[in-house]
Amino acid sequence: MINKNSYYIFFICFFILLSCNDNKNLYNKNLNLYKDLVNDINTYFLDTNNTRINLSKYFSEDFVLSFYPVGHKKGLTINKNQYIDSVLVVKKNNFIFNIVHSIYLPGLDEQTYNIDGSVRVYYGATLTNDSINIEFSAYQTVNFVDGKINGIWEWADYSGIKQQMLN
Image (cartoon, rainbow, N blue to C red; front, side):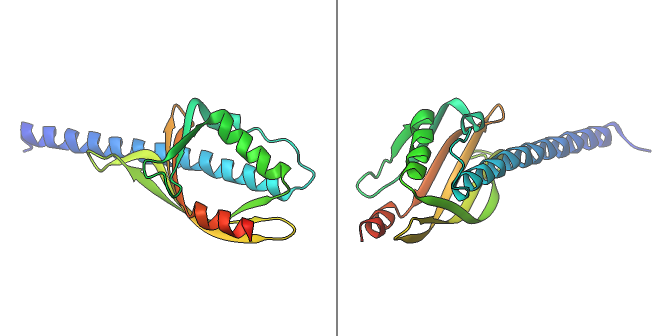
C-alpha cells in the first residue's frame, strides 16, 4: 500500500521534471531565434546585391550589446539602433562578415544553476574585403525577454581585429 508521503514525493518530482523541461524548451526556442539571426546576418553579407536586412525583429526595444575592448575593463555598451547601424556600416564599407562555425550551450541561472533559457555561444568568424581576411573567435552570453534578444555580452580580440585592419 502506498502511503500519503509517497504521493507528495511523486508530485514534487513530477513538477520539478516539468519545470526543467519548460526551461529546456525555452532554451531551444531562444536558440532557434538566435540561429535565425545568424543565418540572416550571414545571408545579408554574402549576397552582395542584398542591401536590406530586418534585424529589428530579433531584438527587444531596450536591447543592449556590451563588449570589452582593451582599455575598457568595465566594457562599453551600445543600444539596438547603434548595433543595427554598425552592421549596416560594415556592409557599406564593403566588408563581408561571416560566422563560420558556432558552439551553442544553454545558459544557467546564477543562483539555482538551472537552465534559464539564455544561450551561450562560441563562434568563429571571418571579416573580409578586397585586401584583408581576418579570422577571429568570440564568446557571447545572450539573454532573452518575451521571445526577443534583450542583451548580448561579447568577448573577442577587438584590438587584434583592428590591428589586422590597419596592416
